Length: 214
Image 1 (cartoon, rainbow, N blue to C red):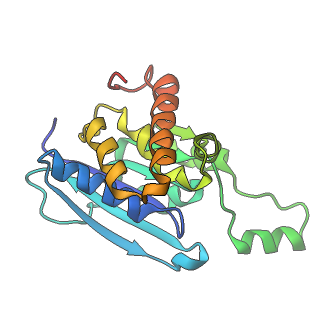
Image 2 (image 1 turned 30 degrees about the horizontal axis):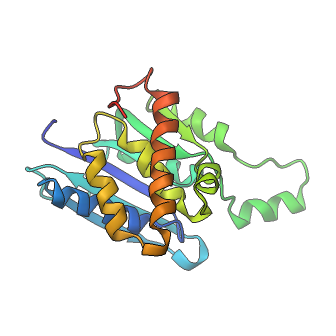
């Protein structure tokens, strides 16, 4: 493992970003990995932007990722990926949910002018390609539904991220952390969501990016 790994986790209020941060943090503690996080909350009750800077490494001092130095962005909402793309290093990893939560302003414009088109996932990916070719999209909502709880999109993305070799947190530590951190009534669904995310990521992306065995 290299000395430092920095990931920016982003999405909108209500998607469980803080829970993901807690799961990773607890897994790092159990694995003797030093981790520092910094959270930024928007209008979380109104689907406002939420982001978490998460940095793993013995030499890390600041919780904030310097611009252009992030190893990865994990995004639970496609449009939010672009908001934070400045933090990603050239050639870094983008793992994002394919679901788009369209802003109210876009919907209002569409109502006024029927020819207006939403800025969709494909448009997001085209913009991201200016920074990196390592763009991986997962339908986290569909996998969360398969897990039995549509609120587990966050755990699906965590599972998808866990297969990449560059992510230094052991998968087993993440599983154990999920079991201890999420509400007990949601434990089984979250663990299944994690496995579904890991399998989907491994099956689709591991011919393109170095991965662990699962």
